[in-house]
Amino acid sequence: MKAIRVHQFGGPDVLRLEETPDPAAGAGEVLVRVKAAGVNPVDTYIRTGRHAVKPALPYIPGSDAAGIVEAVGSSVAHVRPGGRVYVGGTITGTYAELALGRADQVYPLPDRVTFAQGAAVHVPYATAYRALFRKAHALPGETVLVHGASGGVGIATVQLARAHGLTVIGTAGTEQGLKLARDAGAHHALNHHRAEHVEAARQLTGGRGFDVIIEMLANVNLNDDLALLARRGRLVVVGNRGTIEIDPRRLMRCDGTIHGLMLFNATADELASIHAALGAGLANGTLMPVVGREFPLSEAARAHEAVLEPGARGKIVLIP
Ligand code: NAP
Image 1: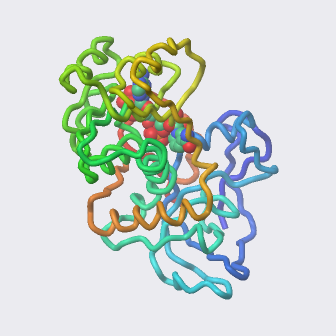
Image 2 (image 1 turned 180 degrees about the vertical axis):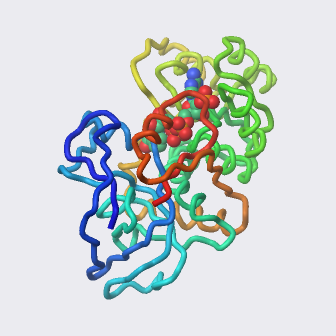
Image 3 (image 1 turned 120 degrees about the vertical axis):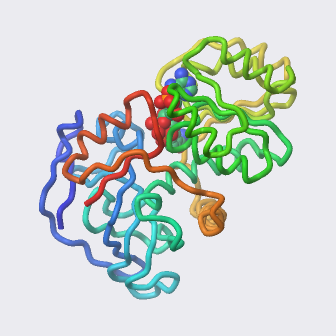
């Protein structure tokens, strides 16, 4: 099969298209013919070799994909050859024509969801779900700020929160991103590059503040976020690319809580439950992943550059 392989950690140029042996499904495993693979920012961090997850070299990047079941090993019953599926994590990596997963990493893909959309589910939606409902315990009727609502996780968070009955304020950095946030269900959208967006966000809550804040760039926004929390507000740090000084008194003032989140820390049971919820939302149409750009597999390096550029417009996927 053709696959992108990394032989040494480094810049995007270490992503090489190569011919490699086809994997085969053993007991409890599923082989998937990949129709689309999701590109996540974390794939670029892992590629540099400076992330907590450091795979043995050489490796095939990627955790997210959607496609058709090619073969199943013994004791796999929930999917069959020829079935449409999406994957969340694999044994072999997803930037390839074939990906091998454990049975519990492979989920049915409803007919209404395209393969490209299916490749946009796992990391973004499982992270968004875990942040909203497992960390912040968001409740219907509460108000959430999705600080960074135009990218993979942000759009997922907006859709999940809106479907759950929250009032949703999202932010983005471009007109296109603001429209995406509104289209995903945000009641209001604000530009996070304008300093006045913090006060504007507070005004939208009638001065009360947010019950929940899901933060995509904590090193920029965390101290402002703390001033925006309502009493007993919960803030979840999903994205962070540096350090920041905060005033802890802002947290004391509101009995607030800051949660860190790393999807890799989710247990197998937690992921099974989260994907049951996501599968239901995909099937009934409340969850509709937004794919902004598709690149051929051979252009994985360009996709890695694009995923870190400002001006997010949904997911970037690779097509083998
Ligand atoms: P993405 O698709 O590239 O989106 C990035 C988002 O960050 C966009 O909405 C972008 O908005 C926004 N952003 C840029 N500048 C911002 C600012 N000053 N304030 C607030 N938001 C800003 O990435 P993603 O997949 O959604 O992931 C978002 C972040 O979460 C990344 O840092 C990623 O590494 C991290 N993440 C963490 C986990 C975890 O387990 N903790 C899981 C998934 C993702 P504009 O481009 O419109 O400005």
